[in-house]
Image (tube, rainbow, N blue to C red; front, top):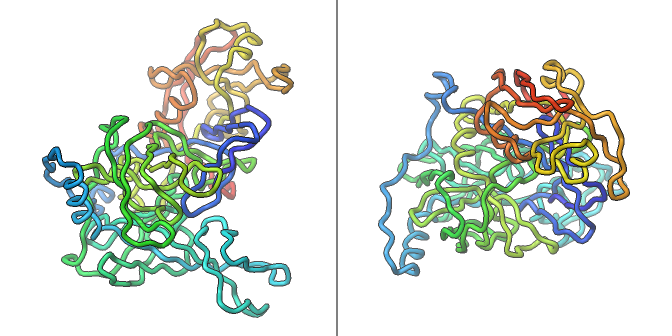
Length: 439
């Protein structure tokens, strides 16, 4: 869960890191089985056209099903959709070993005290000092292919030591972790189940979505298996904190996230968000709430993100994300005035350039002059990024989305930069994003 509470408005990006600072009364972004940090940052995806032959040979998702003709009887269609899709949705139960100080460790029945596992089930007996304590959690997932691959969230299964998958018909099997990507909050697990007993769900095209479309979520909220809820797409193009930590304790962001009002709650993590044709158009992952329960705002990782990353996770076990290496913020009227810019100037102000990063090697300049704005000290005077590969950049959303969807590690991008009143271009060769540990 990411508690969006802060005093400063500085937006930080490490490789396109964005820090959102809101007032203390703001809401809480709650990953459906996790407690997250405070910062939004970019998450980058691989361009399908750049995949290797080995990646191209990776088991693919179920082929798109023939489009279902939607009748005017929505109730009937929803009932049919449940019958079609529910066999492909699974309950995922996990167990993770944790090393803690047994002198100070206590279990609190009914209290979700473990980041990543809010559906914690405390042990019946108190842990003895010589025993290894565990975290217990659960979430949802969906069958990706008839080879036994299942997609879920990283924060559900990405760090689990034991994984159990329970199918809609009650079949319970052990699963192994195949690949995990905290930057996109996606993970792939695999079960050894005959293909004819699996029901893969086809992926839809999340780029075709429109606000107002009816969608359906199927999963296991609070452990209630096979629960279906419906709603609409409330908004598109949201940013969501990922599970990957950047320098300074901030977090990268997942762009182009889907917002929905279909009811989702803890335990829905990793389950599918479907359109009325039965296609997976998102992976349910978080809610915005002050009470840790659904409050009308839920988020799902878009299916096109799944389509880019999951095949690589199956093939390689991990995914490399491109990294630029700056921190910065969107332009505000006060910043424009402090830098003597045009009132309508748009772009991203570079506040800091990370030493040794691609941006540093390319010669991008950070800010070096302090100004006081609304009682806060901000740095200004750095480069302003106004375009990337001739695509206009009005703010961080534009920059993050482009790097995420259109670039790969090793690719060179051309930034349009406003520097000291003159417009120049800067070529930057993107590197792999540093890991959470900084390696």
